[in-house]
Length: 433
Image 1 (tube, rainbow, N blue to C red):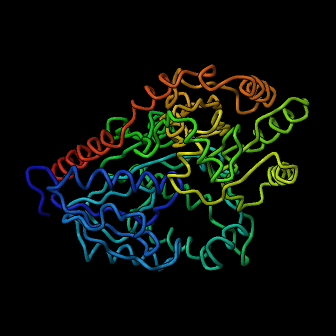
Image 2: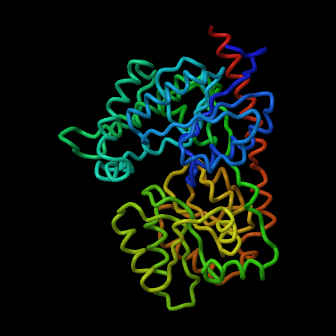
Image 3: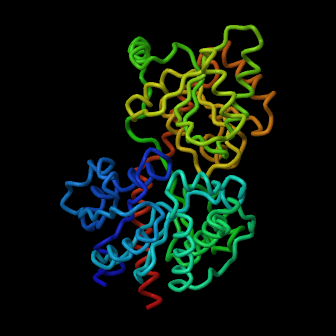
């Protein structure tokens, strides 16, 4: 180990899950700000071939070496490959920013925990058919191999998860170990890590309550909005860009994955009820990919699209997303649980009001800049949508308040906190050796 005075000189950064989703965006943005800040460190970055495009800002840096992992996601081969790559490119410290723990390595590691939703809401876990469609037939069997490997490498977790429900039914004659997979890996991550980074105080609280993790071992390192998400004061420019995108002039906006915890049923039901009022109502724009059958949500969205009331953007880069934030009357986020919820801070950075479910993460992120409703109260959401449809953005919430709140979060500050966490982790690991 080549650390100097409790500071690492090399860090192995697991970037296998880069993408447009919140966890992937976090990993990319943290790395983009860490590399120029920590020029004294050398980063060995492990990524998938398709993830290289997400690393273009740092891939040419002198203190970055890329290591490609071409194996299939969630396969046992991936489990073996990541261990081999870590052995070939050893670091003083390993950072796991996406809640994945590889076997076969002994270096101290820092892990970023984004949420515990699958333990708190096990019914949100994907079914066997959904896993097979997403990752292939071997993925479920490989999960069991991974669990066996984890048990050999790390031993049982110090604190067993309290959620014990199993989701997924039968596949290939064996029970799908989805809850076992999630429920085993998370406590391993939380209890075996040298240091834990939580994306919110809410996640830190959950780690303490769910696994009994010592709160002094957990540092809160918030997400933030990328620099591209800023308020555009030239409204004519925004209107022109919206026309180029094929977006309406007035609309409510949803941004997020098509997943159960996003609670899209509440939004779609409330919006459908609003349409029946007979008043002139802004349209609904959704930046999502309806890639899972959620039942009533799919039916409601299909009807709204057929009637011309809803528009879906399935692929949207950050430049176009910034335009949509700027043009929206309000962002609507009805989730039943989140660890942070990046679109909230991105919308606020663009000066766009946020209508939010009153869950702890939303209150932590938006504070007094948010307009809140219960995630189980469609009537209140319908009323808020009606009030918002009859107002201008500044009447809903001052853009100064929104932007001021968003500025409380910055990737630069989060990168500085992460770098400090690396130093603390090295001191802790050296103290144990």
